[in-house]
Image (cartoon, rainbow, N blue to C red; front, side):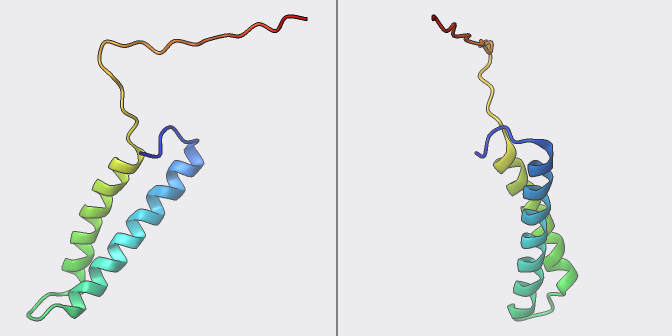
Length: 76
């Protein structure tokens, strides 16, 4: 979804998404009735966060199509 990003920004997006999902998972486990533990919620958040990172940073490639560079020449 976010397309090709420089490496630094890919790392920043990944870390922010994973930390957010782990925190939300741990927080939601405290709100659940029953014997949920924060570590279980954090683990589930980590799994969902990893999936979210893959979806955010995935660059779709169409099979059978080559990337073509187009050069424009300036005429003076």
